[in-house]
Image 1 (tube, rainbow, N blue to C red):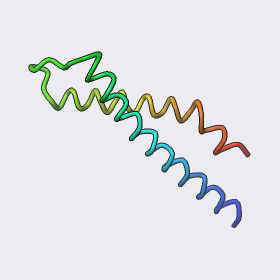
Image 2 (image 1 turned 30 degrees about the horizontal axis):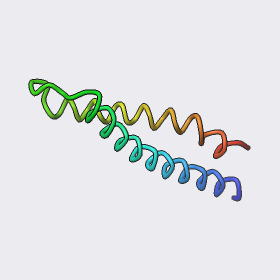
Image 3 (image 1 turned 90 degrees about the vertical axis):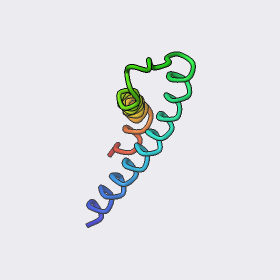
Image 4 (image 1 turned 180 degrees about the vertical axis):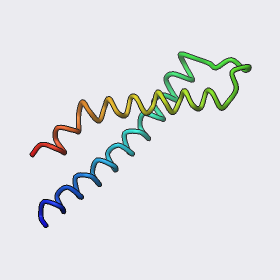
Length: 76
């Protein structure tokens, strides 16, 4: 029973941590990449720019989670 609750708590912490990291990286990518480094061409469309924004944010969030949080949350 205790093992199941521990796994549930770790899973919930993982979801919350990944969500916070995604929100942070979404803002970071929006500010840095799309404001200062890359301005999407008008013909590319808003939807494609949004998809690129979300994909870059997801990759950055996954990398940050793996580098900084995964071992601390799931170390047995």
